[in-house]
Image 1 (cartoon, rainbow, N blue to C red):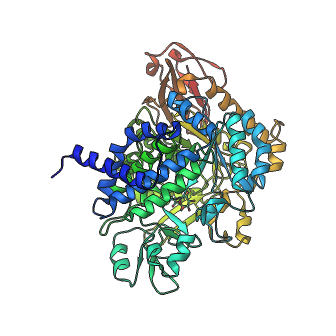
Image 2 (image 1 turned 135 degrees about the vertical axis):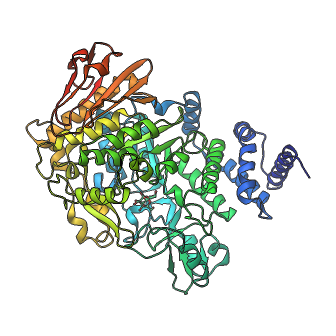
Image 3 (image 1 turned 120 degrees about the horizontal axis):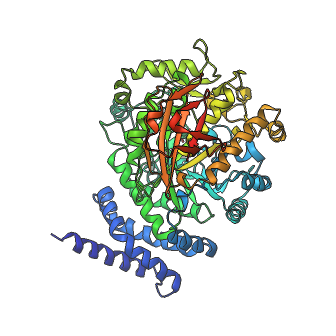
Length: 631
Ligand code: OTU
């Protein structure tokens, strides 16, 4: 029996022998640079590979081929990106800065195509954006595309948006403007029109093994006993029948076929797709639907230990061949699971679905107990990692709080979610929100909510608190630690768009209500303070500018601050020596805080958002929905 070290040495020799046979030349500066990173990463990658694929006879062959392919990707990596790799290595905490500001949009809906999106770069720079997430832009089926989340080729841009060259060009323009490009890596599934899928559909055994395909219902029935239905409107269970009668795993829509990562060839192939993406000049990839990437019979097939090992293996491949590329995990699941993906060696960046959902929860209930508890208990993460704090995404709002957390306040999760769904879809008396329900599951009562921020906060309904509520939510996303994310168009108050109902391929998917075209008319009004768009824009700008000049908001150190007022959220941020007290009133009425709460702070503080002075020892009064950053 070989010791671990001996195994590692043997594997390394095997890899080098295989590469030598394939004619790999190590005798040049480029290969030597790779070699240094290889030496640092190989023990980890080998270990992960052994755990994931150790039982496959050809495990080491796959590993050797993977290394060879990664080296080739490294050699193909443009020099400016290699320069970026070095500068990021010298400043690994670059994304922790209080100057970071994220935004996202659809290329076609915001600007028609990639070339015309360049025209908006000056606006992005003016606004202070440093991170731009472009919604999926790769080749996908014409109608059945799930907004681009059914990818037919990771190597081709959707033809109406432009070409790969346009993407590279845009990435460069953005980089020169100090903006990192973020795109999705939709790696849990491909579209049924992907070349691999077409071959699988034709019965090719090699590519049938790229997916989860079964001859009859025996295994699908067994799996379906324990997996959840994610898109029940589309199909029941997790499998759909193929034209030839076989059954295939589709977690999401029937045209999104789950990749079979228990096959090492799939990991290898997808690593290549990932590295080729990185070489286009993408800085950050959003790892879509991470919870679903590994399946095991008898489990929920969500967030299994191997899902983490897989992500770590992808991460390790990047450290060798595209070292500056960072991962953001997209896990909209139980908060314990969300944090399980956050690690410098896995996904250093993660969406913060809990804080997002609980902001909305507190607006509806006007109470801060749940969001307060989440800040205290679930907000702190590894100091080298960052949350992406958002108010809404392109998807629905899922009420992913932990039932056990809510139970501490006597709140019953199921009933509370039902209330929130009713409230945000305007089926609750006195609601200010105008959302639409999504994926209502009559079997479980589960449902999610869609809509733009302005429609959900009351701006659409003409509620007097609408703008303040929107600013309140953004002020939390801007101050809670991490990268704030603006849904582009929100900064001028874009409203729900119901026209999706007339579009084939969108009509059955209510999430499109929250994905309007760029609201040109509202943008034109943004400097006119008499308009709603102008009022919102001015206040968003105020938040952006305040954040940029507040080093206390950098990093992610946070502690909760109990305001002893059930309507007022409080927390303290501390970065680069500056301490900031964030207070946020979720009530529709003014609220006072007891001076006793401020015995340990400076007696006189300033609200960094408005510049207003607060003599806190005499107490703090906040207007309805008012939020302050006191320093
Ligand atoms: C993601 O979301 C994308 O954001 C969606 O737009 C896609 O439709 C989907 O993947 C498939 O690619 O179910 O309602 O964390 O909540 O990954 C959104 C689990 C989704 C899921 C999430 C998924």
